[in-house]
Amino acid sequence: MVPEPISTIPWITEMPASIEFHSVTPRPVDDHTRLHLIRKELEAMSIRQGRLHMMDSDPYFVDCIDEIVERIKEYEDYDPTPDYAGEPPITMAEMHAEAWKQHQLLHS
Image 1 (cartoon, rainbow, N blue to C red):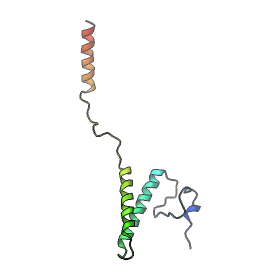
Image 2 (image 1 turned 180 degrees about the horizontal axis):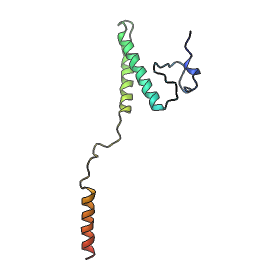
Image 3 (image 1 turned 90 degrees about the vertical axis):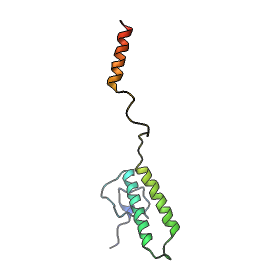
Image 4 (image 1 turned 180 degrees about the vertical axis):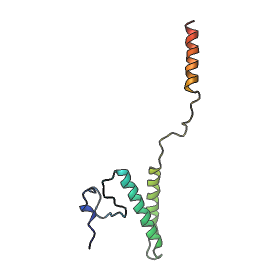
């Protein structure tokens, strides 16, 4: 029995027919999940290439795959919180207490 081509699966319409994932889910997935599946497939390709005999493998291909996987990991692990974010120099209670003192001085 020949597996069904990926282009005929209704929820994967934008993907080229040549890409087949080992982790195909039976439901629609968003682009971030699809990117994660692509990264997993690329990692599997790199492992398969590593298992090949030296004459059958392509080191440049493996290097390209590894670079792409690293870029995808950087994107997935991105944290938009700035590095300088932390505790404010004073708390809200201290800020309000200072504002109240200033208010009392101005209106006394």
